[in-house]
Amino acid sequence: MNNALTPFRFRRVFLYASLILMGLVFIMPIYVMLITSLKPIDEVSLSRMWELPTAISFDSYQYAFERLAPSLLNTIYLVVPATILSALFGSLNGYVLSKWRFKGSEWIFTAILFGMFIPYQSILIPLIDFLRTIGLYNSIPGLILVHVVYGIPITTLIFRNFYAAIPTSLLEAAKIDGTGFLGIYRHIVLPLSISGFVVVCIWQFTNIWNEFLFAVSITSTGSQPVMVALQNLSGSQIVHWNVQMAGALLAALPTMLVYVFLGKYFVRGLLAGSVKG
Image 1: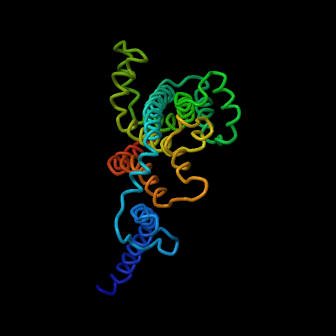
Image 2: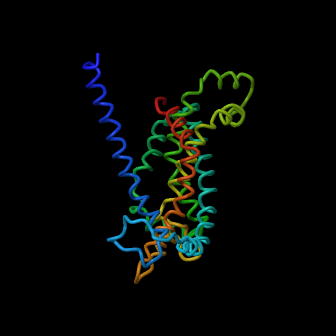
Image 3: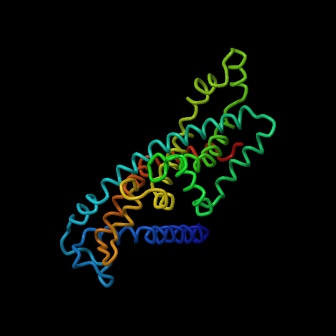
């Protein structure tokens, strides 16, 4: 009996050892960032990067927060409306393309999905010209518009797959009762979309919060999001790594909290629509 279990136990030990090793690999950068952010500047060096601080100092956090606070507000003004709008448009698109299919709808869906594969760099120049033309260049509303448009392909895909799980007979019964297009969406589809909205909002919130290229290209001082301000925190002559690490942790804190508290809903909602459509 024991001999028969030996290979099984060996595989379990190997599996857990591998998982612990991979976990340590992922945690190591966070460990270095955390202890570096708590060190005074005279203890920050490459040779002492793994050592714990002799005295914990929060001066770097205070300095980093003072520098990042205006940009943190800009990021909140950007992320909240951009996430909500892209989720709503994606929900409507997914509703139409899954339950109100018409001639050519598959081609339209394919064209929308194609937007996910267009590199940001390839459309920067025409995008900036367009935003200048409509008066939204160097503004948070302009950045919101860009993220809403770029977010529609992935939000449409997620909602279309999610709505495929809703029985069509339910919608047909509502049609027989005289409910129209928007009435069915508002009274039937929307209340069933909570999991889909959670997935899309977490996805969009994280992507928009961490996005850098559009932010640095479209906005300038005064309207820049936190990721651009974090890059500017490094300075031009000397990099204060303790401040840089403290700023990076402060900038990453909201997205980490979102995944810690809503991560299980994200995975659950993503799996709910993964095998449909």
